[in-house]
Amino acid sequence: MMFQQSSRSLLDASKKSSSFRWTSSVGRTFSSRSPQDWVTTEETDDPSIAILKMNRAPANTLSLEMCTEISKAIKELESNKKTQAVILTSSLPTIFSAGLDLTELHNPDKDRLPAFWGAFQQLYFDLYGSRLATIGAINGHAPAAGCMLALSCDYRIMSKGNIGLNESKLGICAPPWLGQQFIDTIGLRKAELALNMGTLFDTKAALDIGLIDEIVGEDDVMDVAKTRASQWVAIPAPARVACKELTRGRQLNELKENRKQDVDHFCSFVNQEAMQRNLGFYFEQLAKRKK
Ligand SMILES: CCCCC/C=C\C/C=C\C/C=C/C(=O)SCCNC(=O)CCNC(=O)[C@H](O)C(C)(C)COP(=O)(O)OP(=O)(O)OC[C@H]1O[C@@H](n2cnc3c(N)ncnc32)[C@H](O)[C@@H]1OP(=O)(O)O
Image (tube, rainbow, N blue to C red):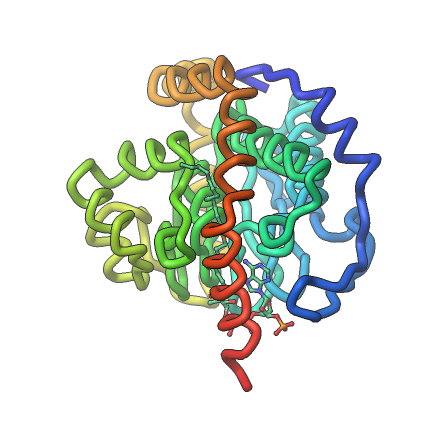
């Protein structure tokens, strides 16, 4: 990995508290195959390009275990010297990732919460700072932390769905490092408006403000992603890595130096009664939406 980060204690803690079937505070039961199946990697016909697929139905939400699995997959790909690029995508039909798993935030387990945020921070380090060229093949909705996954890629193509940082609609605010990623991508004024309003952009609007780089047809996503990956891989790897360090190194180091404070800040923010009320309300609306 280009920007080596240490998170052993947090991730070790996460392993102890893993649970894969639980009932949420609004009474819905989540179950799935084991976390090992939530993320898969595939080879392509070019040995330098791999695919990383998120398969956590129904919405590829980022729980502690999901963050850990994605991080693990990135590290495994990086450990193969031949691999120079990864295409990040979803195997779900309409959702890239619905962001943080709200069951982690609402009525949280006090011991698990810091480990959860540590795993989310680690995912940012691993994806945003990867030595690999990263192509986001965004084939569905990508709100909030789903948008973070997209923003952490080097190049973003999108076929359908909405993307953006909608945290304010949940009564919360993106952490400074995610907000900064957004500002660095689309510029301060556009980010200011979008963050305050919690705007989710359709593909056209996202392209207009520079949140994505290209709109592609649904059937062309993987072909275009492979073509773009080949173009990135054609740049000599030391140059690519140095460019990434130039544009992302400061932000990554800033969080690295403030990691513990960021976890503490997150935990005290989320544990506030008003935050819990807002999250509970949003979560209930989400669950009721279809009914
Ligand atoms: C300065 C202080 C710093 C402190 C920081 C504090 C907090 C952290 C802040 C920011 C970081 C990031 C935060 C987040 O990511 S919060 C999550 C935000 N995500 C959303 O708002 C998306 C919510 N989901 C949707 O809008 C829709 O699901 C969708 C993505 C548009 C897809 O719609 P569709 O109709 O296709 O699917 P469903 O709505 O039926 O969803 C399927 C299924 O999944 C459940 N679900 C969806 N999203 C989540 C989620 N994020 N967490 C948990 N569960 C989710 C949904 O309820 C359905 O469940 P069901 O049981 O009904 O099948």
